[in-house]
Structures are given as structure tokens and as C-alpha cells.
Amino acid sequence: MRHGRGALPVVVVWLLVSMLVGCGDGPADERVAGQWHGAIEVPGAPVVVGVEFTGRHSGVIDIPAQQMTQHPLADVVADPGEVRFGVPDVPGDARFAGRLDESAGAIVGDFRQAGQTFGLTLNRAPGAPPARDAGPPNPDTNN
Figure 1 (cartoon, rainbow, N blue to C red):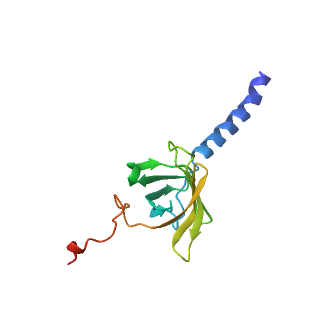
Figure 2 (cartoon, helix red, strand yellow):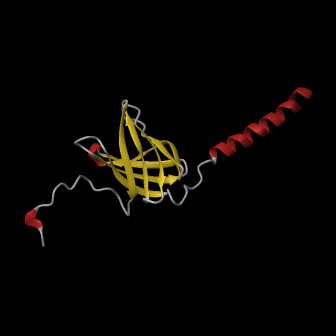
Figure 3 (spheres, rainbow, N blue to C red):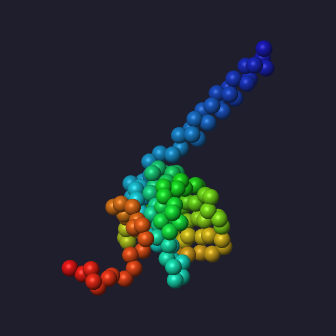
């Protein structure tokens, strides 16, 4: 029976660690939480994106040009000193790494995909990003 007693503390510790790991997604820092929008600076064809940090380690992305809406992010860190995420199910290991620039009120960093790096600045968004780039204004629609 002595063999059974030694296993109990190991099982209890394992259960506690499992519960703590499962509860690790607390709320994102209020300076980072919420909706952001910007454009990946691909030369000649910026790609509009919207990102929402829903927790310290969770979020979603909208990429209207790719008909991607509320796509879950992976490997999310939503802290002012380190903001990063991956976009699963997108070819080329798409990833963002940056930080909150509090003086600019923006998240600034680099978006990497398929071995290339592009700048991405995310600004606070009151809502979702536009469905497409607006383009130049039409003079016939001025008030």
C-alpha cells in the first residue's frame, strides 16, 4: 500500500498545475485590450486589418481583402511592452511582433510572413475596419 500513498501528492500537484495553466488567459491590459485597425505596409498594396485583443492571450483578426472575419489568433501576448500574435491557417507563418507606443497611442511593430517583413501600426478603432480601401474621393459626391 505504500506505493499508492506516494502517487497521491504527485496527482494533486499535477491537477493544480493543470488548473493554473488552463486559467492563464486573464483580461488584457486595458491599454491594449479592445479593437485596433491599421494596414500592413506591403509595397504598392497595403492590406487593411482589424485586430481585437479579447484577453491577455487571446484575440481575433479581420482581413477584409481575404474575406477573413473574426479569425482566432494564436500565440497572443497583449501587454504594453510586448504585443504579438500569429495568424494560424495562413500560409507563410504569418506573425506580428511589436509594442504599445503610449505617446503615439498606437501599437507599432513588424508583420512577418513567408520570410518578408512589413511595418504595421495599429490605431484604436471604435468599430470594425472598412470592408475595402476607400480610394481617392469622388468629386461628384461632394456636398
